[in-house]
Amino acid sequence: MSAHDHHHDHQVVPSDPALRTKALESLLVEKGLVDRAALDALVDAYENKIGPRNGARVVARAWVDPAYKERLLDNASAAIAELGYGGAQGEHMVVLENTPSVHNLVVCTLCSCYPWPILGLPPVWYKSAPYRSRSVIDPRGVLREFGLELSQDVEVRVSDSTAEVRYLVLPERPAGTENMTEEELAALVTRDSMIGVAKVPPPRGGRA
Amino acid sequence: MNGIHDMGGMQDMGQIQREENEPVFHQPWEGRVFAMNRALVAWRKWNIDAGRYGIELLPPADYLRMSYYEKWLTRNLDLLVKSGLVTQEEIESGEPAPGSQRAIPPLTAASVPAMAGLRGNFMRPDAEATARFELGQQVRARNINPVGHTRLPRYARGKKGLVVRCHGIFVFPDTNAHFLGEQPQHLYSVRFAARELWGEDASPRDSVNIDMWDSYLDHA
Image (cartoon, rainbow over all chains, first blue to last red; front, side, top):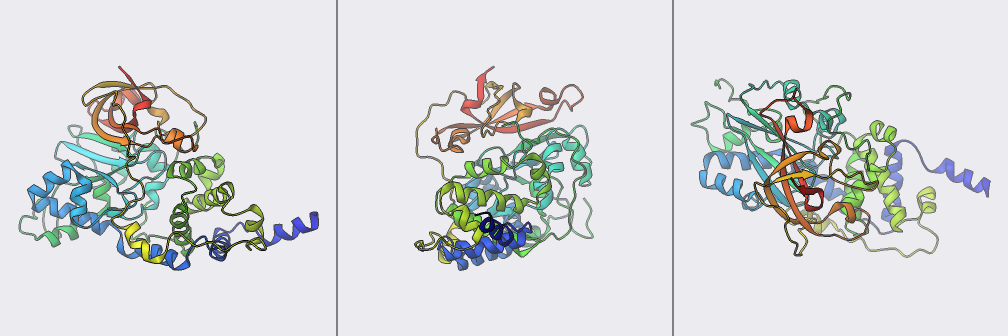
């Protein structure tokens, strides 16, 4: 019995997550619990198709189309679906508008909730202890770490995503973009500005 | 559970480490763990709340040490065994038990675009519930300390806030995580002044909005 157990101890439970993952995947495929082609398709979808460019298109549309912006603030899930985005971790969207007097910042203190269909999977810092712990108690300090110093006159609103509602920040449209097309505007919008840890930088050569 | 995952308000976790041009997955195995998790959820043996609770059950030192997807991997091994989809012996041997039936995966490559795209997997429960609170009402977060799963962060317990948005009816994670039923109930966004949460040193203008289930709140 103990010899048998020993044999197993050596063979399995490798501490390296890459090896444990490989072993688990083969087992699950062998048992018919997962389809390897489905795993490939999922990795491909989140590596190549679903990401912050989706959110940037939503923001650019809201900047150029006041009626769309109104629908977006009123029923974000439906307005985002108009552009073809939706799905897992984006079923119940709320859009928070940043203005000269209100700055929104999104965090998930309890885990890592994030609007996948429009921002993709979250960056490591968003899931990290420093960001999750400090955003609610010292949002201005966190913003300073991201290079954004806000005046005391600005109201900082942190949204802690504790439920199945997912938040997207609608950043302010930078000055100097009046003549830009929707597509050019979308190219300006950064992931960080849609989480609320940054503003959208003015176009190169322009001034805010 | 008053665990390490409930981090809001801690101050000793260090600087935020950012990475320019960060890849979606840093190593191929991370993508495989992510994808396996999505594919296994399709078996509907556990729910999103049980999944989160599975990560909260990691010992605090492991929780802080492990990378994100290592936590997922460890949690999934645990849920696979608990749900009976896989036995501990199979995980240890890396082989299906002799004579076991080969299953048919519920998630195929063809269904991935629909799942990742327009059809979500977490829908509002089709249920009725009475809202105990309404927009603009003053509320107080209950001071509860359950040993199981909860989404009421410690830093908000006992604090007074204002209902600023009504989200409709959602599954209640505190019971759902333990397979004790969905207990559908109203969910609200409650605004807490920074000074109510953190005292007089906080900015008088700032606030934190927290999504709160009906059961987390009392009238104030």
